[in-house]
Length: 611
Image 1: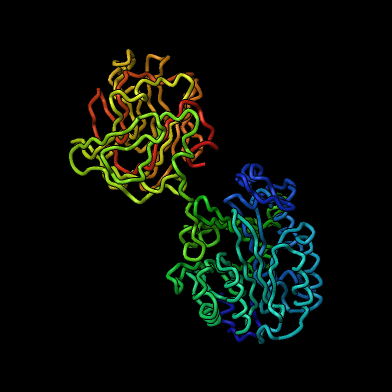
Image 2: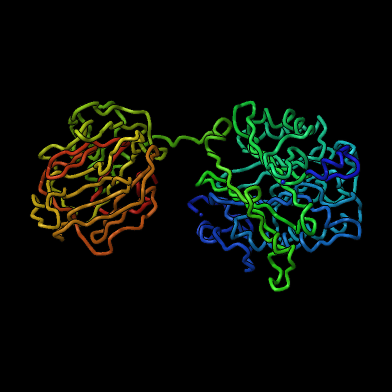
């Protein structure tokens, strides 16, 4: 924060709140399995780590260090807090998958060479650990009355381009040396981070726009010392005069910029503003120099989670955290971790949707059915054609499906499909109950599939999206076998239940309920509650002894440990898009079905249709 030469009033000063195949393993990088196990590490752990990261895991962390100027204030500072922060970030690098560290400027208080000489060895802690980082000039680091054409400075001697050229992430700087950019890899893709000067000149803004244009598919994080401000008691940030200039010259028309981070003012705050493309830009201010011990080396951690479409933000002081609790003073106790809504919060971002205009997710190419007819395929139905009266069995086994209409609207063709689905289409089943309505499909009375008992195991797969129409579809069937337990000679607890049914409870829990060949009662696998309106892939795998349910290739919990073998049959047809009780169709399925495959052996997830 400037107190002497930027024209800011004293009143404002007082006011200013886990891997799959293809992982890139770099020096100091974790394997996917290691990262998946460690990324949920315990906060505050003092266990030393190798500092390795996983560039492919969907969760990674950007560490942000705001104004540290009071730690380097002539002879009045103390480098211990920032030293502790950097050492802790290195220790936590594996646990939190910390891929980059960004300093927001005002490294020192008076722009003196002696102060930079004090700061330099602390930043060398990151250099030695090969942790990539950026540093930008705040108004206390240089002559804040001038823009970045100011010429030479002690700041530039310490944090000019020569310092960053050794980093693999470093992309380049403006000719004056005061603006730079980095490209780092995380969550299986590249990200661009701009580190802009306290007062970029028009030429430097043009440089930044050119950098973005030369990386047209990369999401961009802008770090700059001043952009938005906030007031005590109101964490909703607002633009400073200079912030409006930054918005107009750079952010508004650069849709790739989705997040901006700045310090300078206090307290922290944040705001969302629509850019010219109509997309959200998240603008955050973070600064703690007004707090105990010049901010106590506070670090803000931005935990990106692309699987959850969320950025989780937390703020901690490693320096205080590492102190002996018995010797910690009262003021320090309050600074260990800031847990108010302004300093610990989550930012929901649908990353794919937000980046779609400049980096659309490539649609996986369609795959011909012939490639998916693997050894043991008993039936394979794709709903990628018109909603005709017959669906051909792609396996070549002759288990074709015939459409059966109930009351109301019949199934219709849909252009929607799961992104990993081989066929790029589906059928929409508008089913319901009371009375049963919609439509379903069934095999012929003499279809070979009707007689199979699957003694050597089976795999049943489907791409599904449940209807989100507000109606009661409890206990609807997706796939079942006509014939009851009684018809198959079973006298279990409810012999009128189907011999086989894959469906969903009233709570949208996945249910696989069957009469095995070797048991006299039903065996049931349960899944968790599914979300209506979203595509998912499901698989039921039996290895001849146990059945396991998978959703999106993830093994679920509630699978019976008691052995069971095969599927009982009364020799009757299979139904797709309906269930029955006592051989009476009780309702039609409501939602989209992309395709179904039945194989007479257990498959591994790597062999599933979505692999």
